[in-house]
Amino acid sequence: MKRMIYVLFAITFIFATSTLVFAGNGETPGVPQNVKAEVYSPSAAIVKWVPGNPLNQTDFWVYASSDNGSTWIPLAGFAYKNADSCIVYNLDSKGTYIFKVLARRFDRGITYYSKFSNVSNEVTLLPTGFSLNQNFPNPFNPTTVISYSVPSTLRVTLKIYNVLGKEVMTLVDAEKTAGNYNATFDASNLPSGVYIYRIQAGKFSEAKRMVLVK
Image (tube, rainbow, N blue to C red):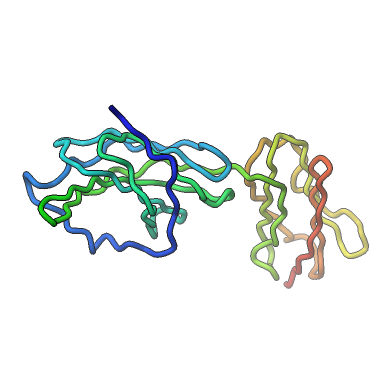
């Protein structure tokens, strides 16, 4: 009977794959196959896989990456012997994640690991609230990126003003579904100085300053 573990928490250290002991033929658990991931909640994802052959694993470990695979963090918990999925909680609600899985087997005091599975598809979690982030880079010349988040479908405007309050550009004026967004501001045709960008989404409104230096 297949089982699913429901509480997994990301830990803060990196478990280097070089410390894993990959067993030889006959001892190695089968490599998990066809790993996929889906959004489960604003701060959780469900990871699914097909157990590999041979089916001699004791359990499975799920690894997560939020930087496109540059670093991988193991989760402080594992899926049981016959599991084919698990729910990963406590993820960053503004993050984009990929996952991979390995099988583990205990035998007479020795732990054996399968090779890692394929890397899953990307999962971008949904924000739980509104936010407008500081542009990056700042100061900038001549382009910068403004990121923002909306928790539900709303009409969103993102406008740029000079210090006198005059509108100089509209970056966004559209209906947006829940998600995290980036808007690029190109100030090639504007003079150096301080500019203000303001977001309006439903009843939410916020403004921040940025500096153009040419």
